[in-house]
Image (cartoon, rainbow, N blue to C red; front, side, top):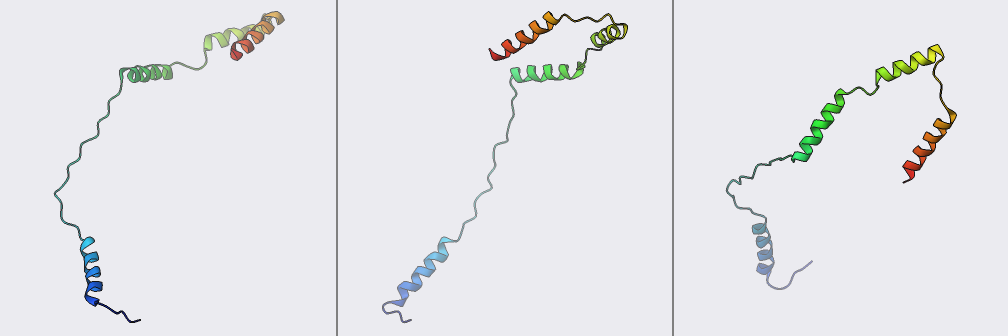
Amino acid sequence: MRIWGEISKITEIYTKQKKVNRTEKTEQVTGKKDTLSISSEAKDHQLVMQALKGVPDIRRDKVDTVTDKLRTGTYTVSGRETADKLINNILDKKI
Protein backbone atom coordinates (compact mmCIF):
# COMPACT_ATOMS: atom_id res chain seq x y z
CA MET A 1 0.00 0.00 0.00
CA ARG A 2 1.28 3.41 -0.83
CA ILE A 3 0.64 6.43 1.38
CA TRP A 4 0.55 9.78 -0.34
CA GLY A 5 1.03 13.01 1.47
CA GLU A 6 3.18 13.96 4.35
CA ILE A 7 4.59 10.96 6.14
CA SER A 8 5.87 13.10 8.99
CA LYS A 9 2.29 13.73 10.15
CA ILE A 10 1.67 10.00 10.35
CA THR A 11 4.80 9.38 12.41
CA GLU A 12 3.82 12.29 14.62
CA ILE A 13 0.63 10.44 15.58
CA TYR A 14 2.64 7.43 16.73
CA THR A 15 4.96 9.55 18.86
CA LYS A 16 1.95 11.22 20.54
CA GLN A 17 0.57 7.80 21.44
CA LYS A 18 3.85 6.83 23.08
CA LYS A 19 3.73 9.92 25.26
CA VAL A 20 0.19 9.18 26.43
CA ASN A 21 1.14 5.82 27.95
CA ARG A 22 3.85 7.28 30.17
CA THR A 23 3.14 7.98 33.81
CA GLU A 24 4.94 10.25 36.15
CA LYS A 25 5.98 9.28 39.65
CA THR A 26 3.61 10.42 42.34
CA GLU A 27 4.18 10.97 46.00
CA GLN A 28 3.29 8.20 48.38
CA VAL A 29 -0.36 8.34 49.37
CA THR A 30 -1.34 7.67 52.95
CA GLY A 31 -4.88 6.44 53.46
CA LYS A 32 -7.19 6.75 56.39
CA LYS A 33 -7.49 3.81 58.74
CA ASP A 34 -10.82 2.03 59.01
CA THR A 35 -12.67 2.28 62.29
CA LEU A 36 -15.48 0.22 63.70
CA SER A 37 -18.01 1.38 66.24
CA ILE A 38 -20.68 -0.83 67.78
CA SER A 39 -23.88 0.75 69.04
CA SER A 40 -25.06 0.21 72.59
CA GLU A 41 -28.09 -1.63 71.24
CA ALA A 42 -25.83 -4.11 69.44
CA LYS A 43 -23.75 -4.56 72.59
CA ASP A 44 -26.91 -5.31 74.58
CA HIS A 45 -27.99 -7.81 71.95
CA GLN A 46 -24.60 -9.50 72.11
CA LEU A 47 -24.81 -9.70 75.92
CA VAL A 48 -28.27 -11.29 75.78
CA MET A 49 -27.15 -13.82 73.16
CA GLN A 50 -24.19 -14.86 75.32
CA ALA A 51 -26.49 -15.27 78.32
CA LEU A 52 -28.91 -17.40 76.29
CA LYS A 53 -26.11 -19.72 75.21
CA GLY A 54 -25.66 -20.66 78.86
CA VAL A 55 -29.32 -21.59 79.35
CA PRO A 56 -30.11 -25.24 78.57
CA ASP A 57 -32.65 -26.00 75.84
CA ILE A 58 -34.46 -28.61 77.94
CA ARG A 59 -35.95 -27.88 81.34
CA ARG A 60 -34.92 -31.12 82.98
CA ASP A 61 -37.13 -30.68 86.09
CA LYS A 62 -40.33 -30.51 84.01
CA VAL A 63 -39.30 -33.46 81.85
CA ASP A 64 -38.54 -35.55 84.91
CA THR A 65 -41.92 -34.84 86.54
CA VAL A 66 -43.84 -35.78 83.39
CA THR A 67 -41.70 -38.91 82.94
CA ASP A 68 -42.41 -39.99 86.53
CA LYS A 69 -46.16 -39.41 86.05
CA LEU A 70 -46.10 -41.48 82.82
CA ARG A 71 -44.31 -44.36 84.56
CA THR A 72 -46.71 -44.42 87.49
CA GLY A 73 -49.79 -43.97 85.29
CA THR A 74 -50.93 -40.78 86.98
CA TYR A 75 -50.43 -38.55 83.95
CA THR A 76 -53.82 -37.62 82.53
CA VAL A 77 -54.59 -35.22 79.75
CA SER A 78 -58.00 -33.75 79.10
CA GLY A 79 -59.04 -34.01 75.48
CA ARG A 80 -60.84 -30.69 75.78
CA GLU A 81 -57.72 -28.90 77.08
CA THR A 82 -55.64 -30.37 74.25
CA ALA A 83 -58.15 -29.26 71.62
CA ASP A 84 -58.41 -25.76 73.16
CA LYS A 85 -54.63 -25.34 73.13
CA LEU A 86 -54.38 -26.57 69.53
CA ILE A 87 -57.08 -24.18 68.35
CA ASN A 88 -55.61 -21.23 70.26
CA ASN A 89 -52.17 -21.99 68.85
CA ILE A 90 -53.50 -22.09 65.27
CA LEU A 91 -55.49 -18.86 65.75
CA ASP A 92 -52.48 -17.06 67.28
CA LYS A 93 -50.31 -17.92 64.27
CA LYS A 94 -52.88 -16.61 61.76
CA ILE A 95 -53.18 -13.21 63.43
